[in-house]
Image 1 (spheres, helix red, strand yellow):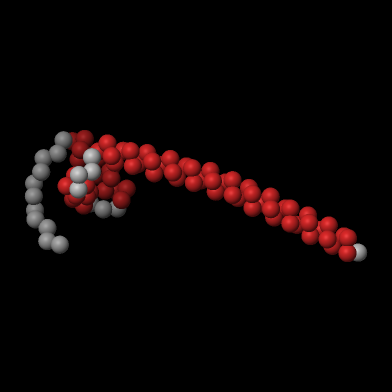
Image 2 (cartoon, one colour):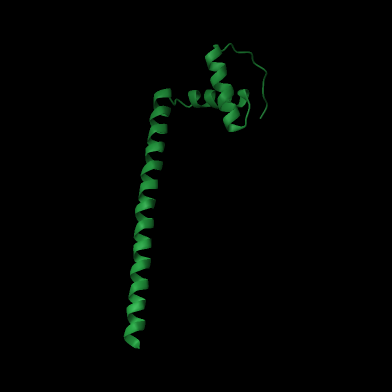
Length: 93
């Protein structure tokens, strides 16, 4: 991919936000600006990105809760089968 040097004027808050995002993602301000432009060119709105972010966070929370339920069920099953094995061993004596 060939890049073309382009000057753009950003508001201080925009630059600060891009720099913070670049630091979190271990990229550069230019990379983050190009990603934002690609999203804009793809027709993805800021509201859609917010909704997607909220949905992703909610799904992550829901999945975490499901994992906790499954882990509790697995622990309960393990205890049940251990108790069953103990009963079998004692009845075999």
